[in-house]
Image (cartoon, rainbow, N blue to C red; front, side, top):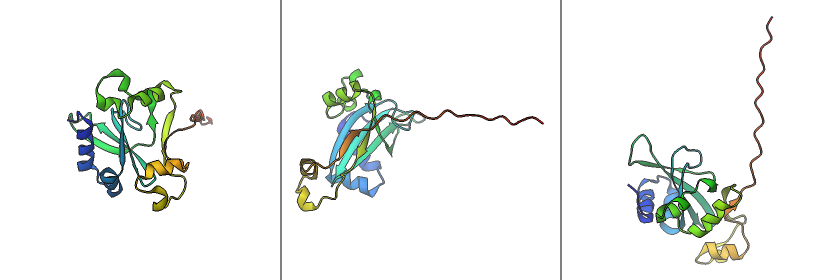
Length: 165
């Protein structure tokens, strides 16, 4: 079972089979956004984690497996559904995330989804210095979490019936 931030990151370290994400876990910035129910592209609840390394940002979801209690699985999430953030409903720090006051504002906002964006320009190691995220932001590069524009409404499906002869 996962009950703390350390257990969540430890589980990710043992179960992620993506080499890039392993590298990010070991040497990048990791931010736990908290618990979400449901997660994007899933009907299950779980946690979202943002991992940043060298100007690249990855959003990873850890979901509960409802068929096998106590088991989890991970996947790359396409966006952050702030309206499903569970931090307001509990005092559990794992569900509140690393910066709960900021996340409350995101949830109370317009309810739009957020997408993860990487660095919009090519930074050199000298530009980034030792801590890439701070100097990259100082240079005005776009990165991190950004509100996505509202989705366009889906067109209605029109069914055509075959003409009877």
